Length: 64
Image (tube, helix red, strand yellow):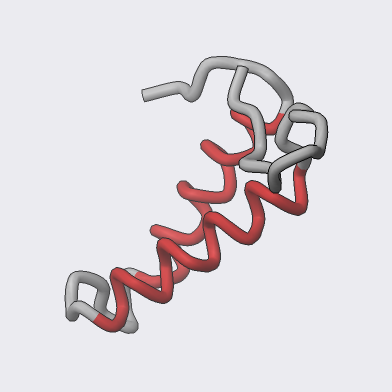
């Protein structure tokens, strides 16, 4: 299980849905900035990424 990064002195805790949502937004923004993602593909890629991140947030292995 993935654990969120923590500051020194804090307890590690399982990553929650908001953490995975932020990761997804950051990945989409980076892909768009690098030119790897065009406007036409964005909705499809966002749906797939959201599905996989939801699997991870629920503690399931991401489906291929």
